[in-house]
Image (cartoon, rainbow, N blue to C red; front, side, top):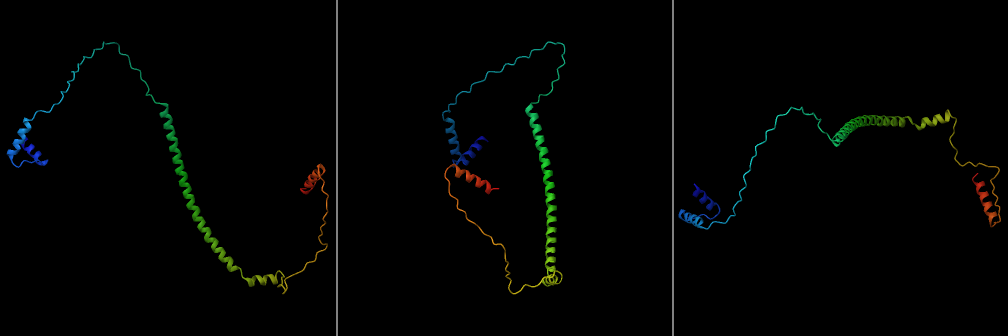
Length: 187
């Protein structure tokens, strides 16, 4: 069986011998070759097992029950995550309410736009220039304008302006008068 496996190995790696005798010769050469040096494997020291000491019997002392230790960081991080989850839920509720309100307002806006178009159409139908002219002449007593629409209005007395020349004063008196004139201007 072993020789069959080696023969298959020779065949699979492209070194197939043409005959069984050639395979046997190759096997003999391999067996007669000097061994490859392999360093010795160090042996481990055997483990020594010690017998466990027997404990002397003493009075049984009940063990103290201790609470499991929880870090402050774990408590705060749990609280923080809980608060964040509450905020996320509240934000989702607010978003849903806003989306519902938006849909309702868009429907109301569409309805108002249709009503606006209907009112504009009724207004355009109601405006008739002949009806307005008849109302203006008969009820309000208006007349059609004459051929010359220019009307001259006379005004009495006419506006006049007087220019007064003031001598320029240099120094503190001129500056003082300038300040007085500014205060009178802004009154």
